[in-house]
Length: 161
Image 1 (tube, one colour):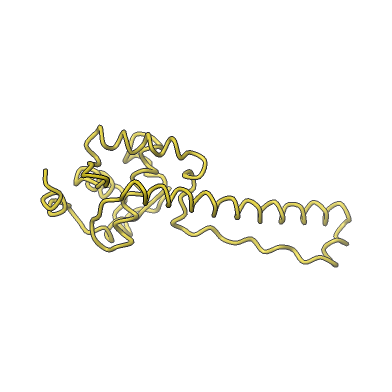
Image 2: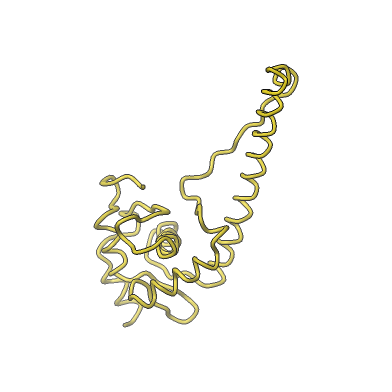
């Protein structure tokens, strides 16, 4: 199937979907869920259906890993402050400011940094099951994937799990 035909067959626009990092009840396993979320998020970011290059996927996974490591470092610092404050019965908190915790963005790929190999497996599963297709160096979502997700996660119809 030609990519132009594939895009014309899409049942909705990318912006009509709510992107969840866990499509419970829509896909079979977590690896597929994360791979689908990455694929659909890229189309949402551009506002139209697009394929994702393998180099772009590598960058997205590396960026997620760095962001996750920074967030974990902040968490360690906050936990260290809490322990020291409790051990000194609150005196530590009088002299040292509690570190602020950055919020993770809602579109942050939670499992990607730790399961990059599993995400690659998820893409392979999506391709084998016809929920994604390869054209050159790009992976495209198929109408079948969009239909599966849209049935459960159209915007404003169901919260992300």
